[in-house]
Image (cartoon, rainbow, N blue to C red; front, top):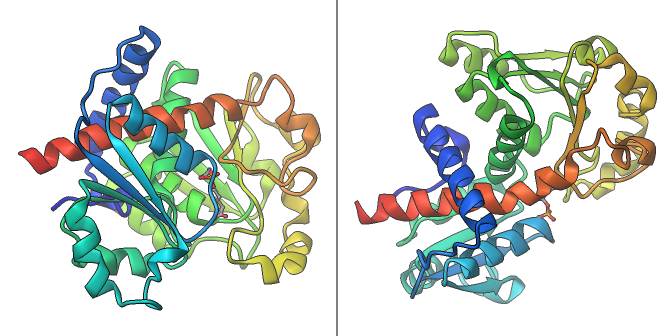
Length: 306
Ligand code: CP
Ligand code: NVA
């Protein structure tokens, strides 16, 4: 049974196949074609954290392909009403596909062990693979040669940055991460990606100005992710020099674009002047959540049938 809990679950060729399919399905939707590829299938969404983009894009893409969806949250009582080994085989026996947004990454890994249908990670504290697929799809659409571009991620090296790093490394796209000490990735994570790819596609620094020089994309995300609210005050202080504002943006390459997974905290990691400017690609990026995930769903369901 194939699951997509991390982008490590997909080879580079499989990521490329998913993205090619996503681009094709996006064009088909624009042409008014809605093939009933998920007819008589049901997708569940089991969410322990709030969501707008992930929930609505998954529900919409599945409905566009004539499938049905079911949103589940606290009622399931994951490990409170009943243990995962009791409810997960039953839930996934009813369903054809399950998207999980969980507080703890290891809970999704554990859930997959008891699952009878494919699971897609819709965000955990560690990773956000669906976001990274949409991010890279956006980069591919906005630049002629992704292999020659530089993405600089500025801020907290969090779940979004983690999946972006894995995706960029697998696809040979350069990503530079600018984060202060304490908010960086373990250097062993960066070096393991570079050893695996045989190239230094991923780098990390604590200097945001140096990191954005020559960057064609500046990416940022909130400094305080869901579940870290108690650390908010300290994080805002520690990350203050990593705000993506007009001054930092001017250091980047001409024509550089802003990426942000959203939701944003305006005035913290990004200023309104940047996110509302014509340089911002955040709406196209969010739109691609639907298309990238549609490609992923169609590809994953094909794996089940093979
Ligand atoms: N970017 C993202 O995953 O948004 P939501 O939290 O609204 O789903
Ligand atoms: N890093 C953020 C992403 C939200 C889509 C969080 O985990 O809250």
